[in-house]
Image 1 (cartoon, rainbow, N blue to C red):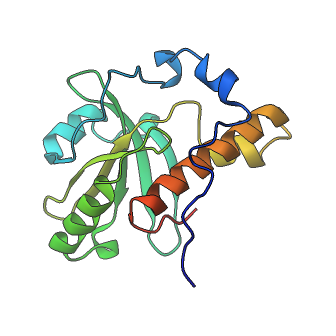
Image 2: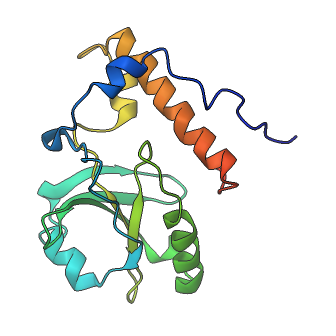
Length: 180
């Protein structure tokens, strides 16, 4: 079964006016148009250790994964860019070269509607992915843990539209398959 090219990507969103009038808010992780996503690079373990405060528990953002357990840490690079560092155990990725190749492949995908992978580290037993930091918790917590604070339906529709834009980008660019 093949993928279809979007026939509507040139059409304006029904929410385009409200989206276009929004101003980027760096406090909430928004980037200004002239701020570019850094190119994918290999980080050293010491850089990431310094950015996350030594992988301290206070910087843990999430822990998950049955098949590939991982921990995500919040951190800040020397250039003051906020990052998320996903730490895998070595047994999840025993071959460092395969890990680096997979990370670099995903790291080439860039879009304003994606949390972009900006680097990795594979020193010794460490397998770390470095991504842009997404403040205000994960999208799934906002969508599925609504009993604490419901997300308005207009926002849910906007999120659906943004996800569709990201998936269309990945499809139209013949990029890797994105699992959501």
